[in-house]
Image (cartoon, rainbow, N blue to C red; front, top):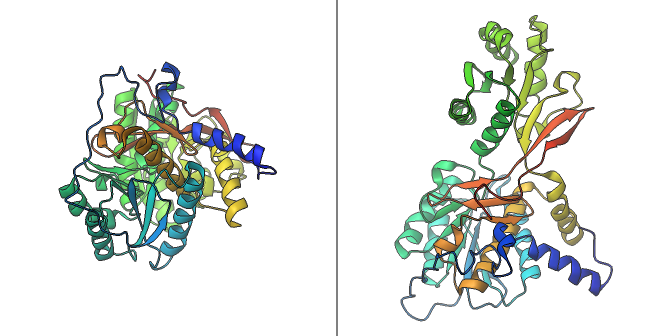
Length: 405
């Protein structure tokens, strides 16, 4: 999306931004406002829990003046990269509020300091102040710390953690859950005839998640995970891992390497140096491959799933024009979430859980997404192929979910 040159162009472009978060089921007619189901869907909106009296004045930075109050919990004074990421999420929320208008919400930005104690205190404060919903926190431990106060008050939370285990009924994760990316990659591969897959995975939780999802997806899609090797981040470990599955790789249709950075090229070069012929094997990855050197000859022809980067480019351009810096992909989640809750509030007069759990789903800069009753997020991803040193879409991200109309 380009920088505005006139008020007229800004209005047209802004309309496009807001329509991007219309319910994916908008094809049923104009009665589907911003992701809510049509009036004949027999889905009624549950009332918000009644506040225990006049709400307290909001504590924190306030953006907007709407009747519906929503708290945004961020590690603004956290350690390490936490404060930088929090600043991006805050900027994205401010950008979204500028698009929906100040009357849409009263957004109260609260600092958790990146600690469990801070997150729990901020959540309790949001409850006392009559927030209809809480956005954030960012880290899974902080999400868990904020959950008790919000759950007991019946207030939904839409957090940004990618730890699937942090989700719960009423605790939604608007994040890029690794399970979804793994599933998209492997389902596409099996749809193209891949049946036997060897996985070479890093030690630790990321490898555990990738292995569990690979087994689940291949089993349901008619494939087989024939062997698994694990490695630490040193050359000797990679050589040992490759050697342990060399025979399985020779017999397999594909090799799954979900890790990013230098891992894909290092693992592939180790396999070829070990005498494994990969010319008839399909390499499979995940969105982590966007951090790899895709110009490496050994990675050409590989497939991996990721967010539609062309779609996110519009957000990145707008953010950079406003704030003078390149934003992270994570920050786009905050933009989409603020737009989402603002539009739910317009249609429902609050943020009821069954509006958040609308099975039709929603669409934003990060693509199509929807929340399940257990709090997890289903997202639509594109499949890319590495060609001539770059990632090119070979199977576009879906524009609606199966069963949506």
